[in-house]
Structure formats: C-alpha cells, structure tokens
Length: 121
Image (cartoon, rainbow, N blue to C red; front, side, top):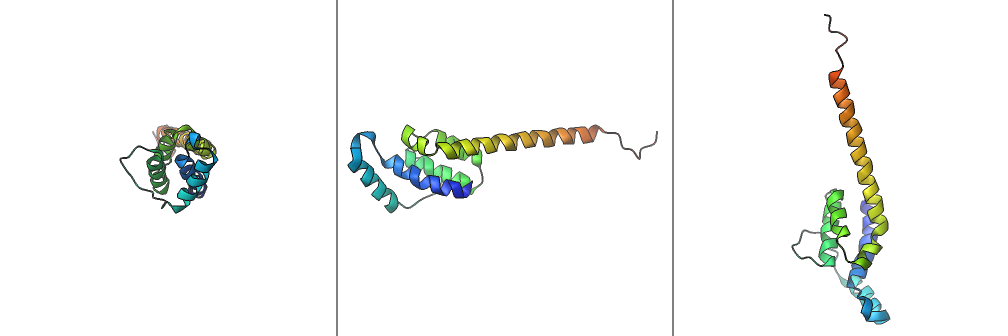
C-alpha cells in the first residue's frame, strides 16, 4: 500500500493544484509546481487538498490506513478521482482486515468455551 500511495501522491498533488477554469496553461503550471513542491508527510491543521494529502501520507507511513482513507475521502473532486483506485484497494484491504479480526475473535471465543480434555470430573 505504501508504494502504491507514493505513485498516487504525486498525481494527487498535481491534481490538487489544477483549477478547472485554468485550462491547459493551468494544467501545465500545476504539473511544473507539483514537481517543485517538497512532498511533506506530516500532520497539519490546514484544510486544503495539499494538507489532506500530506496527512494521508503521514498516516500511510504510520500504517494507519483508515485515517489515510478518511483524509483522501475529503479531497475535492479532481484529486479524489486521481486517488480513486488506491482508495478502493485500501477500503477493500480494511474490510478484509476487519473480517479477519472477527474470525480471530470468534475462534478465541470458541476455544475459551471448549472444555479441557485433561479435566476429569
């Protein structure tokens, strides 16, 4: 997930700098500026798309996939679309992890209820 996020992060930062009304020139400028920006992965109190991407990157680094998904879900439409495949994969992974945790909990519950075969009554 980390490697895939690295690839998506670059494109998402570029998309966050594009404004639909800017046209082709705006897209070219966004591409240029996105390459000049230092990719920060930190917690920040700002609420723009670049800050959300930064926080998501921080959470990915800390292996907090749920928090990363929450951040990326709040992006404006264009950067969110860029992240859509990664988001889908991340959500599926979270569902699988949740299902496995339920299975583990159920197995623990069952094994704690089983009588000890060495116990003689």
